Image (tube, rainbow, N blue to C red):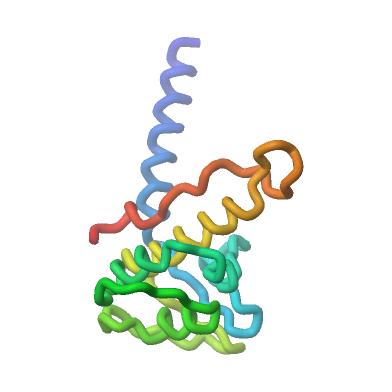
Length: 146
């Protein structure tokens, strides 16, 4: 029993390490047709319209190296920012069907983090009256060096 428990613990630790490396290397998909930002290869997506009620636009601006000022974007403006990064740090890759692949950078992770946070804050299940029953979103931006 002792060896089984040790083996199981070792397996869990090693699987956690492999997940952590993959976590920061997944590309994002910008879907213009449905105005969504998705993690490639999965079904986890966030609507760009979530930026509307946000007050975290400065996080995104900082990640893209934009000047310190007030930012307030619509979903379409956020899409334009992702597809034309002001710092020129990447080139989005068209993959057909009005969809683009963008790489996992600190800035693209921050966009995901902000949209995930807005989704959580709008739809979380604090008192049983909301629709989402998921934990506080895990920030992806800390999985890659800045």
